[in-house]
Image 1: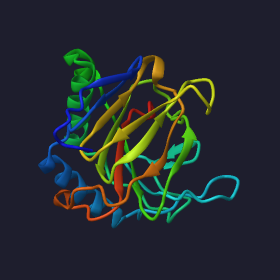
Image 2 (image 1 turned 90 degrees about the vertical axis):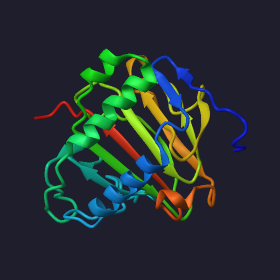
Image 3 (image 1 turned 120 degrees about the vertical axis):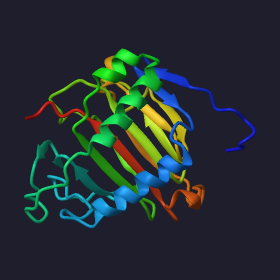
Image 4 (image 1 turned 180 degrees about the horizontal axis):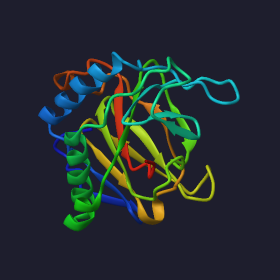
Length: 218
């Protein structure tokens, strides 16, 4: 997108807020470096197998908790049985700043206590079908950070995978937070635009998406 055209903060739906360019280039590089370290293990980044036998086109890893379809676990029994990395304090701090910025509400930010991150890497035409984030036992907001190639982020409603929905262009450094009435809205990524990222972030190709959540689990 033309850098001369401002992209203002936007409430896409009640409780769903897009903040363009929120994460600085330095912050993006730090997150890419952390994701590279996590991807090396103890549980490697992988293509998740779905219950009906399909395989997700994105590559995924978990921090704090291991995610597999419909459940969170401390160890990756469906991969190699290893325990995922601990959720770091600095990532929780980042999540609190993100909620504060999105909602313009310091109290909401201070109350946010994410305990897991789900990292998705989109390469080679990877997409994400419409789905709800409902494996958590908490209705706290989801914080989504984008790095690398621009994507079309389709944000829908809580009742159906179909319309009405809104397509939002998420560029490198963009923040998207959804909570409140939109916490369980269907959403997905039907398209990633190859070659639109900034190599200075440390990600030479593809799109990296880091989502912070509160599992509500002990």
